[in-house]
Length: 332
Image 1 (cartoon, rainbow, N blue to C red):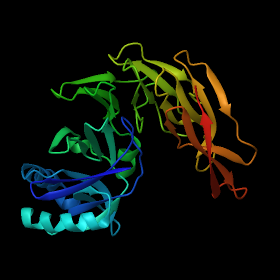
Image 2: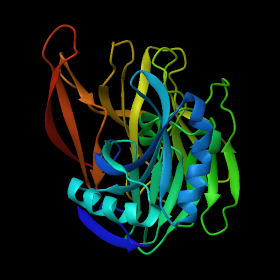
Image 3: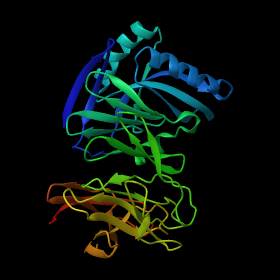
């Protein structure tokens, strides 16, 4: 883990870095909350966003609820520790004349590209951080998300560092970082289901993007593939109208193979299943089948030739509680 502290127009930002071209959702960060706008004032969110952006702040907004009321939170910065956030809050107040509060968030992911730059994925848009300045890459406008959706489907950086692909209004959009040129590479899938929390990821050779089509347990979730130019979109692992879902996947580091967890989606809270791999032909190979009363937890990591996963052993019949045991698997 690498920590970077940078000063930008007197505002300090500190980041926890993750592996090159990789993201780890649901990490806890700290952020500055500049304002809470309730229903009648939510339209002011955009104006405050533009004001803070003009003052060189990395700013974003989030849909939420406070005191049982729908609201929009205006936030700025992302920090690895509460102490870093406290230091930044002092400078933020001096710079903007706004007194922020410090809050925790799991709605941000930071994607590092080989130590050259980061993509900061927020509920309202995507920012590029080159370790000197922030640049807004994408503003989702009125279609901004809640924290969970933002963390589950961050932008993915192409292997050459020139493009990103991200979920955008139910479509997959490819954007050239240098020019901002956007191309929708998946506008609709075969069954016409709107994409949501699709977690698009580039193949290691940059020729393909894999993604999940529908994070809806009742409909089943399929693993799909499309060429980087938007051609030849197809289903690799088919679960349409089946009580099965692909819950997570990762590309192999140096070949066009995908490792994934697929399991029973009829559980009250589906958390995992079996561990598989497949090539571009969509032929699955089971790698780990858990014993009765357990599943392979959906969150796993690949580092070089080693895949790290967890076995979730349920404590009772309801399967609401479980213990996790970490395991490793050598991959070719």
